Amino acid sequence: MQGKATGIFSLVQKRYTSNTEISGLVKGLAPNQKHGLQIHEGPDSTTPGPIFDPFARIHGGPWSVERKVGDLGNLKADEKGEAQFTVSEPFVKLSGPFSVLGRVLVVHEQPDDLGFGRNDESQRTGNVGAVLGAGVITS
Image 1 (cartoon, rainbow, N blue to C red):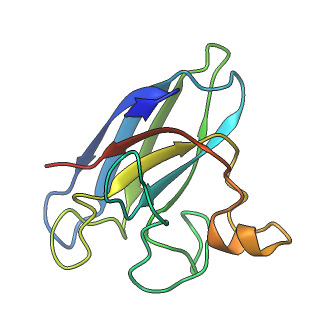
Image 2 (cartoon, helix red, strand yellow):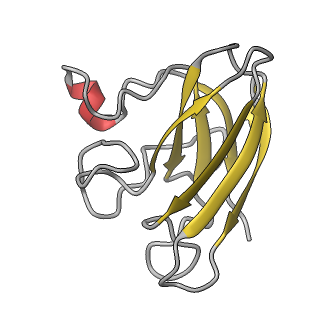
């Protein structure tokens, strides 16, 4: 990842029909705050582009029926500004036509409102604000 926040993530998928296990550790966050975590289209970490959304959905939380593939929810930083993240994700794939390889994993400044905000930006991005850190997903 690059930016104000630094971290490392691991994405593991045993087979195409399996969930992708995503885990990571991020440092340099605002202490005791939530920060949105999303997968963006790219092309690189300096230009993350829009949230990865191959099925033209509205923004939602990771458990929402209506959501973009890149909607991963929030990281919760501890008192040192560090956050650990682990999720078993059914829509994120590491192979096939909708693979996230080459996409950009982004940590944002603000919490993701998961599409519950009362404005258009909530439906697009979850009102997550600026990019704190980003990194290209590679194999």
